[in-house]
Length: 107
Length: 320
Image 1 (spheres, rainbow over the protein chains, first blue to last red):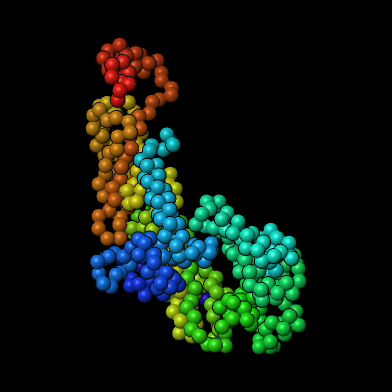
Image 2: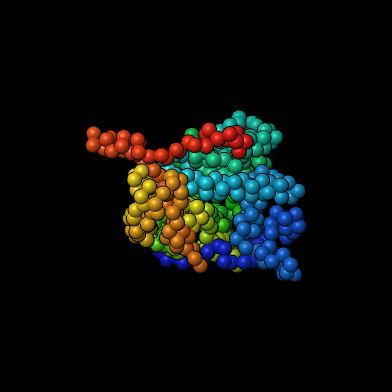
């Protein structure tokens, strides 16, 4: 059994290329390109010929892989489902922000 | 290893059709998948369901599993020698189920569709990714912290067989974590086999509820109860912050619900400006007052011209 101290890296600071994104998520380049073209996964620098992807894209791509495997979703349905999850997450964040502002005794 | 009843997990009879297996899986995945379920323990439940489905949807694995016979769930058992001779002839006398669970065993079968099915081809295989939830306190997020991780990871041994290997290590969470933030630890997931890359470890940070503070991103909110006279006259109060007590000036005529900002007293960010701390004003009144106090309140009642509900009687109160 090893005991070691590991320094964590903030996920947000690491941008990866499309091929690295494939490797990290196990999605095929074709599927990823489809997700990028529908806007379900967005690069940091859309104008660049070699787009780089950040933490949000990596999270979405891993999510896509999980959903596709666990629910047998096809590539056409994925962007829709991912979009709905994105909206739910944004709403949940708003709810947390609003709850934080409410005095504790009134909740 | 412990026996698992994959049919019971999916709520099926042993002779269930492929179609029934798929339907049962879909129904349970819809119910317990961690992405769509908020039920407590859903993730563990989904792992069981997924493991059962991975075995039963594959005709070969299902056959091998069925031939193990039905036992009590959780009962310790060893695959009998004739079963091993049929399904794992190459393992020979070297076979050992140490460190294996039932799904690992079935993954190793010849002809199985799991990763173990490609063994012998000496293909390189990437290690598995791991994702774990890490709840931390607001103090930990403020100061940074070290956490002990105890993971039981499936790894490939030199023969390309999956084994569960315990890994214990300390991980340092730098200060500046916020709720929902993720950390990736490259190469700290399962080991790759034959040149395959190591898996990554993903940590999902969540902040535990705190008795005083509520977090929103890197900003913190704190209830600041004031007595009516403090709110009217203004005062200076001591306010706790994660970095220590600070003095806050409450201006005269402070209203309930108003937020008094303490700049940079919230959570630090990995880079850049720390968040703010907001003191949310509550005006609280004593439940017990003595005669002298009552007399003073009565005096105030008769002296004050303040009309808190003046807008009720305004003509246009319905319009706005």
